Length: 460
Image 1: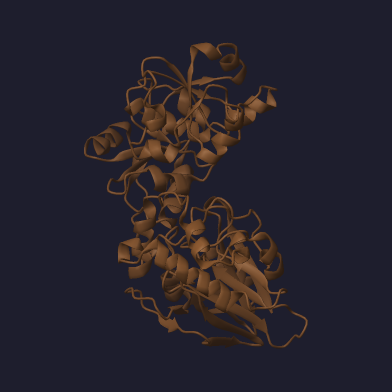
Image 2 (image 1 turned 120 degrees about the vertical axis):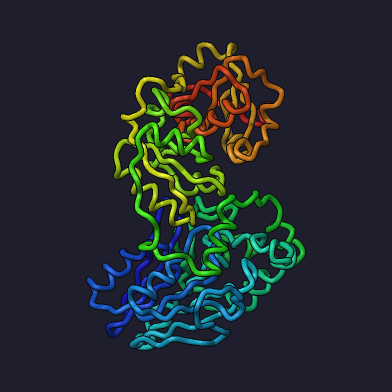
């Protein structure tokens, strides 16, 4: 038996390769499937089956890629009603490869067609049952129930279905069952999932609030409460997964642009994303471009903040940056790339974003108004004294309630955890008319490291 979790940090996404007797099954693959093909070849396995536990909204699934490149049979849950060509798995249906049996549990709740896959080694009495839970259950949390509201299903109804699925399908399994979800911490598919990417059912009975909650109405209320607005790209990725996305080989190649060509594309409606690190962006960038650095969760933030209807001009150090960004954007369904502009082509007619050191801000604190763009829970746990909360997702959607009372003409320092999100926030604040913006280098992490105190909501 061969079992491997393949984790993609930038999307906090887990997929799985399961194999035996020269055959392999891939579960929840990402769109760039070369990693599965290379691993299967290394092990002498042939990829014969590929399964999606549900219609993913946070990434484009590689079902069609593996069907085309490997001849694999595609499977989704019985309740799948999209156009993607596939076989449908119902409760108890199974696939046999060598001594392995992969069987289906129908677990609606996150989506109507959600399934979990039990992996049993029939040739070994000592091997624990493995359960691939998709987005039905994470380590420490469960999947959000609100992603199918547009299909006429209420979040309350879906949350109730999820409660039933957990208790009727998952909780009766033995405590030794190993739990392998499709996501870890950092994914927008849940509220409070752990950074651990696997667990056991016994541990989850203790650690996962959703298994401990035994009142259905209270479970539904708890699950719905506090779910943030799903990122803009979720609807796009889900639509592609329902229909079947284009093969990556069908996507147009990345075109290198001159400064004049980039300016023309932007004049005709394109948006521009600068891929460089915060300091390089601050020293000079194309007017109107937003800084979403490749070194962070680039695809998730680009998919949350970019306009889904407009093509994208990418700006970076070299063509490899552009290719990497194009790949990451294709993983979430953003395919309209107008081209790549090398940052050395920007010339001297650039905008700048001032960076301010934590000690300089601390020394002149009374002269600044401070905007913290982190999530509310982060802000409440401790922030730079005097800061107001204006979460980045809200700024990107035009909600500047936290900053509404501030003076756009006054010096304004923008803060996040390390300076990555605050650089993005400055883009939206500049659009809102803030004239003297300063990005806090290193964010609250650098503030604390310098021995400077934070202010918490409990103390204010």
